[in-house]
Amino acid sequence: MISPNSKVTITDKIIATTILPLIPSFVTPNHITAFRFASIPFVAYFLTNGFFKTGTVLFVISAFSDAVDGALARTEGKITEWGKMYDPVADKLLIGIVVAIVVSKFLGRELAFIIIFLELWIVVWAFYRKRFLHHDISAKKVGKIKMILQSFGVGFVLLFVVWPLPVFLALASWLLYGAIVFAVLSLFVYKSI
Image 1 (tube, rainbow, N blue to C red):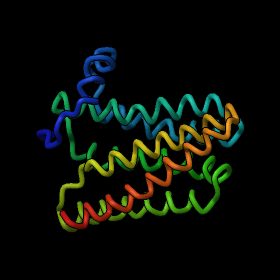
Image 2 (spheres, helix red, strand yellow):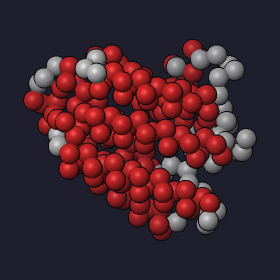
Image 3 (cartoon, rainbow, N blue to C red):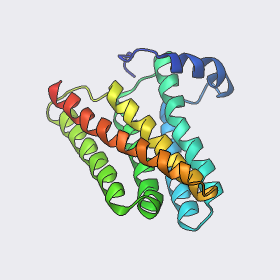
Image 4 (cartoon, rainbow, N blue to C red):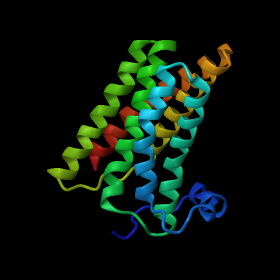
């Protein structure tokens, strides 16, 4: 375990007072990240097989677990090298799988391809920076904004699948295009550090 190098955010404080007291003390941020990894095949199964309500609920829980593990790590000083490396990988796998399944179907393969390509590029660049340049690869503000936009964008696509209101697809589209902008910005932020 290493000392925290990320500032505690307002969101972290809210989660720390509302959600974290409900989590048993033996649960670590890495356990929550492992849960996110474990949930991905189930999310994919439900969405692929037309169980959209169940898949959507599990996606929301899994995506929200990212905020929970981050709050737990930062507020309780439980940031680890493993978590810094694999928490973003779990996020990217979760988003990538859902994008491949539902965004490609309802918003187009091109948009899905761009999102997945940028996520892969970010992962490869982070591993390179960590392994060969020995740089810190903890999430920066633009990367966090990208993840939030992606999660809400994918969430609106899933809402459209469950309740087919065109406004959900319009919102999803704008949020996902915004996420693309922040993905590109995050690559520049990491290159300049």
